[in-house]
Length: 352
Ligand SMILES: Cc1ncc(COP(=O)(O)O)c(C=O)c1O
Figure 1 (spheres, rainbow, N blue to C red):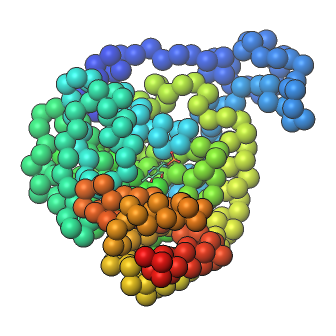
Figure 2: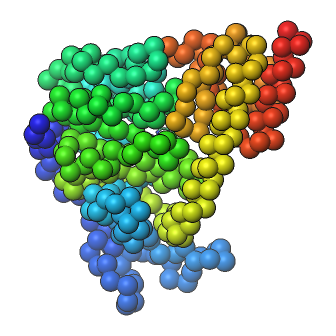
Figure 3: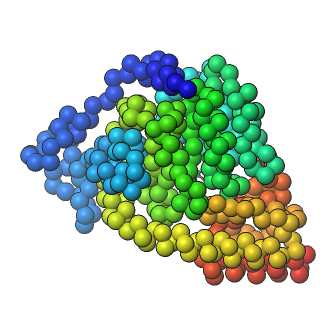
């Protein structure tokens, strides 16, 4: 299917003259820099942060390109994935007119970001076991539908969506399909980044917040065609990724083995937690997970959630979310933390 980018963009974005920063106009490294109204003396901190960072993060993107096998020009970096989500609404969706499709139960920011931008929301629920309904999704599309958000592995259910079902959506829709792979490093499946050449309407999101353990730095990635990435670069705030984040992630990427070792440990803990939870009588079901958390159906989720807070154990109560009645979402912790959770749940059964 063709992807008519210019037809899909909001008209004023297609013709926008972007802000031109000092570093856009001169990107050399040598010289006396009197162009960006920076502090020439230095910083009040031990390390100097007085100069603006690279607005396009080219060194970092090249390193990410190497590990992800995606060319640097097809990578956008945002202040967390959440920035990319917001920019997509601003680029493609006309407020008060266009709509997007979300697939509940799913990550809450798609809906919140749509509402902030005054964009219509169509909901096509997943199946009872949290898989896509491609025909229903495509049926929900109308002339004003701009984006379909697919979260895989899905938050809060934890499961990976079936590859063929995602491809069916990609092939049946003329607008943008966002595949949010925040948890892909915990999954056995291959990333959809490898299908970017075949599907021009595909945008894949990943993040350094989960497997890499860098949530506080705020670095999200979007992978798409060069043309879509150019649009995001034109509308983003000029210096959206701090120098500290760029430098720290650059150093972290060199330690991919350490990231893989952490993922291995978390997956072993996930198995331990899953098996142990299944042995507790108050646990009705533990949904299979391809992520670093488990969705767990219990008898009386709200009361258990409140009890766990009293025990200073904080999980996420998802029981009000569609298809997640009586479900808690539990992040896989360290062994001692998982043990503490299991002991608290065991105790709850006794005192109930
Ligand atoms: C599916 C999904 N996408 C994106 C994010 C946010 O990622 P980031 O920290 O990069 O903004 C989360 C955070 O929990 C998530 O669950």
